[in-house]
Amino acid sequence: MNRPLFVSLDGPKGAGKTTLLEAITKVLRADNRMVIRLSESKSDPYRGETMALVNQLVRNPSRDLELRVCERFADSRAWISRHVLTKQPSGSIILIDRWYPSEAAFRRIVPFAEILQLNIDRSVRVPDLHVGVVTDPEISWARAAARSRGLSSTVMHKLEEHVACTEAFEQAIADHGWVLCRNEGTIEDATTQVVSEIYNVLRHPRGAGLDAVDPAIDR
Image 1 (cartoon, rainbow, N blue to C red):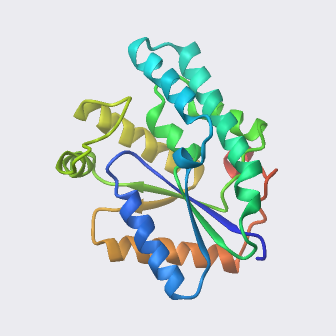
Image 2 (tube, helix red, strand yellow):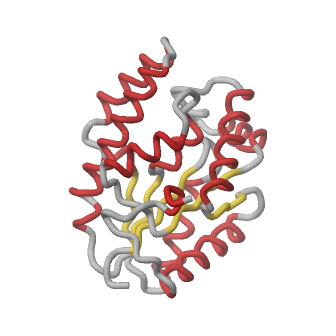
């Protein structure tokens, strides 16, 4: 595979994605792999305007407003797909912190199938490997409470909401055949699993590209 391998890590808040990304990066670079670390939020030129819309949604939930939020995020991913992902070196491994699978955790009104179609219609880059990172919601809630920034969520403020978020995301993993990484044991175990999945895709690429269709759409 000469083009960059694109891997997304998604999941609810407090699941340990950032720590896992750091560990995966370290292992891959130790094996002389070129790793590019990206974050959807930091690569998004329209983030401020979109988050202002998210804050409106929190104050006044409605389907129309949530759909506008989903459309804005899809537009941003299309921009990142065209202007960021295409500029990464051949043969590199791109690890991105959040991509469209995370919408399955955080949206409550618009069905994820509709959100997925919004992204496909905009030619958002389909990851070569989707990794869904989850933990028991009480564990991730406790992890979040222990860190200085807390849960740092605009849309969730109660444990019950976090439980619902986790359950919805786990269902999406099962529905769409993403790789499930249950990050409740050691970070070494989770890292080994994801690195193994990455090397498996490198050995047997499925041919996803900028205009590829997510396998979930074909079902």
